[in-house]
Length: 222
Ligand code: SF4
Image (cartoon, rainbow, N blue to C red; front, side):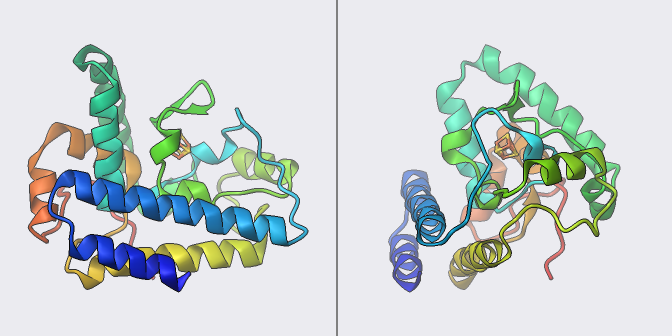
């Protein structure tokens, strides 16, 4: 794990352009997927996750500013302005909904990720760490959580050690950005993405080592 963190630190210390920052994050996400896959292969973990299942895409999604900018720029590159507009409208509606909730209320209700289309992730290649961390050993448990979002005591379907290791790796990744002075606040994905697409100043603030987003919902640390 440490070599990947060192590589990210090297990448960030030399990063100048938006392209450099996106390339550094893509490499880090690739390493994260590799860590995840290696651990699953090395152990007897049997995952039931499959393409087209989106039960975890109704949970609150946390993401850091660089992850949100990577998604925003990918969408801008892939979609025409006409195709981007309905997504921006969906994101604005989502931001309004989330903005009326406390974090706990959001965590105990089903709110569909605005990037999920017909059960598929529309930004799969650049989805944030939190989405990559999700995994399940028990489809019935996922269904129960989806049907009873208010039941936070339900143990869920994760493999505990794998989840903890992936959470630790995610935290170390964010800590590297923080070390270099960049905003490493944990934002709610949809509301922050709405802001990133609407206001180019968000990127300039983050690049200037200030807080990137002003309206987006924030997940408190700890
Ligand atoms: S970003 Fe993609 S994987 Fe993550 S919750 Fe949204 S649709 Fe699901």
